[in-house]
Amino acid sequence: MKKLLDPLLSKLFWGIFRHMLSDRWYAKVRYWLELNEWPDLEEPEKFTEKIQFIKLYERTPLRRQVADRTKVRNYVAEKVGTDHLIPLMDTFGTLTQKTWDSLPAAFVLKANHGCGMLRIVFDKEEEPYREAYLQTERWKKTDYFKIGREWVYRDLPRTLLAEKLLLNDAKDIPRDYKFFCFEGQVKLIQVDYDRFGNQKRNLFDRHFNRIEGQLLYPPYTGHVRQPNNLEKAISIAETLSADFNFIRVDLYLLDDGVYFGEMTNYPGNGFVPFHPADLERTLGSWISL
Image (cartoon, rainbow, N blue to C red):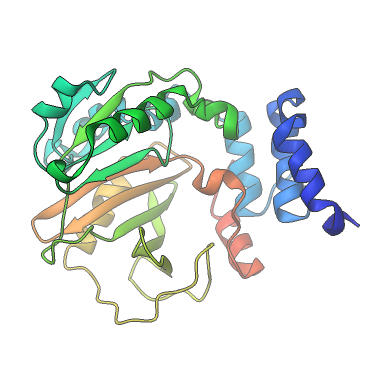
């Protein structure tokens, strides 16, 4: 019956109902709508259930600090040094014409207060300033906390950042390596391929052995080579994650070094499970609440 009503239930939830719910009931109802079962928040076992628990009950200043794209740079610098930070061009409240003109030919624009608000500028001469300005203004009007109830984003400053554009030797966007860290230990590595095209995703253990499983995207079937600086990246991820029972550390592994991307408290906001179910439960067992 629910399957037949899913479109209507989803429309009601996103349109009106979610605004009336507490954070706990928002998590429970959205989990039910998206995963077709109620989460166990009293004795959570699955990875997604434990992410919901962390989101609801582990509200520490440190988790909020690393969610802030500006303040996390200070945290990274203190833990592993500034060499692993992507060079920051500027931070500003509004992308004015003067600010746009002052930026280099290529860069990345990001918003401070949420995920997915990103614009890659390969060549500023081919990018209309007005379009970029309007996009960043839409970002600033977006209350990312209200969309997903990820409390770490509540009331973060809605500022903008311009960072250096990282490219690999082939002049492409580098692959994203995401290190799932449990009690300061890397136990799973997610690698995304062609993130801005036909995205694929593979899962590996800390020794870069393929894990048979899937997280949202189908697996990449091409040749995969272990990065030369994987051990260095694991060391950085474990240093950054040492004060968390769970967090994901995203890094870029280039020939000239390992660069910090972000730290993610709640991958997929806790609504995207691993498959098969055994893998979902195994990852859940690695989180101590």
